[in-house]
Image 1: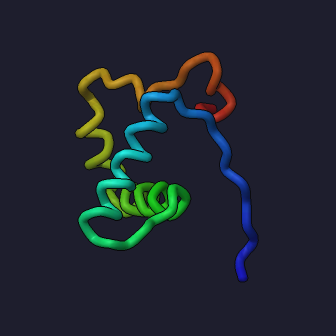
Image 2: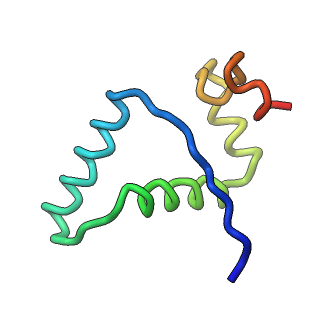
Length: 77
């Protein structure tokens, strides 16, 4: 088994509620439960499979999610 690392971050309540609602809808439609962990890991894996150039071109709209803030400065170096 490969070495494991913990990735922890906080999200605002609106994002948490949106994720929970999405997963509840997923369970109703598919009759299968998916954990928040599995859902987030799949999102990350899908994003990592996207070529960097495509990511950059999609995020040139001034979206702050890709920019560094004072709280995240160590991640942006």
